[in-house]
Length: 361
View 1 (cartoon, helix red, strand yellow):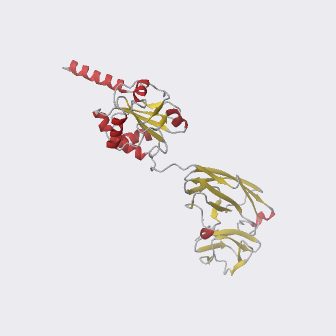
View 2: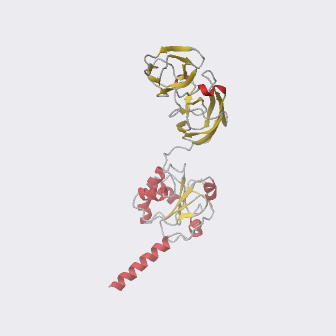
View 3: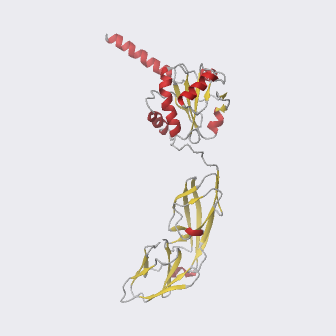
């Protein structure tokens, strides 16, 4: 009995091994699906997508069981418009049978019948058992030689995610580019009346551009446009064919007479690195003086000016106009209500020392 069991188990292992596609590198093909659309494998791979190929035939019971799960995973990965492109290839069915199959199972990806070259492709890939599902990487290597069993959609999803393929909504991937008015942002600091560092982001893509975040060393990016003027640009959206003018505010300590840095802008269309150069001239010792502090910075409703023997305190806008003046009493910190200030950059002057702060509501 044990010998019989061992023999049966060996046969099962043998069949499983035969079910795999024996190739490790993809062979190119050009085929026509059952609706008359041409499919060229290497064109898809060269475009940067993975390709999932499901080899099947319509009267195959395991194929009928697996297909709804494959279709569900197709939707999870963005309907052939993002990281992976799905194709199914029949070894024995004509166009009419494949069209009925597509209608029954809701298959939206290319289905290649024998008339479109399906049998030849199955032979080319030495497919002997059905279904056989393979995954081809953009470098043309076959990274999954057979995905089986396919008990549910998460089985397919997990297998593809293991190769770095990400899930997406079934929306077209945006095309076009994000353009910046300058690759290097440069400005000077020395007093409160200097022009800010400004650059413009142009959204020349086919989708809205979300500014998800930015990473920098001491910089704050504020909107210079319309109703959102003075607001931090994080979370803002730039509509397609629109632009956003951005002010770069430096809130860190002045260190050298020329400070070089990198600003990473993180968007829904990708990440972008911009160089920043700040030229600090002779007034540097009057900026960010350590004898008084400002916090929080940026401020929303209140700004605390802290220090000893502050005396007379004046606040200026970026036009150099004095908008507030206070007298510190008994050396205590001064709490200034800035809720009525417009969004923007301001300067605090204590004696001959100045510091900048930002108001964002």
